[in-house]
Image 1 (cartoon, helix red, strand yellow):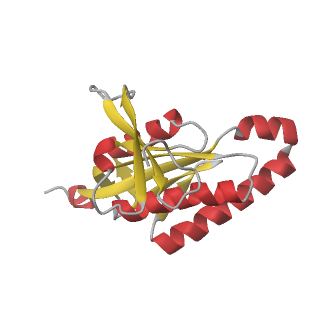
Image 2 (cartoon, rainbow, N blue to C red):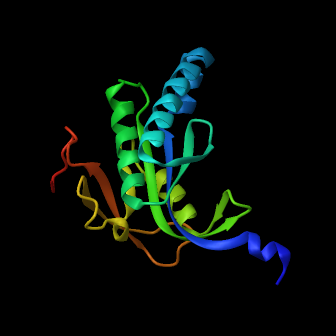
Length: 180
């Protein structure tokens, strides 16, 4: 066996990509100081929720982040809480997110490669402000604090078959969806 092969193995993880909607335009119109103030508040909120929910911030992506969780419920609840916290703070920039779960390659102990990572990223790009999107198969009975509203089949770049997509929200959220 190749020595490097032991450093690469498949694991089950849940991934989320979160992003502040409209950051580039906000920076252009409001300036760097205002943009930095928004980023500082955003990152502070994300760090606080991630640490409480046991979700790791894998990397910061400018006005967004990639999150990794072991338990799907904790990751979903963390992202929903982050979105609600950003909203509650009356940030001029709403958050959007994409979440997916599955087997990925773990490379060198801290890098994840595989379809769930790509799916979460693409769903974040697809999401509107305030939306948390996920494949319908992510929703499970253990998610007692989460509501899922069907969005429908969506063609996601890089995936051969359309994916059934849902919008996730908190059952305690003041923003109720039609199917709650």
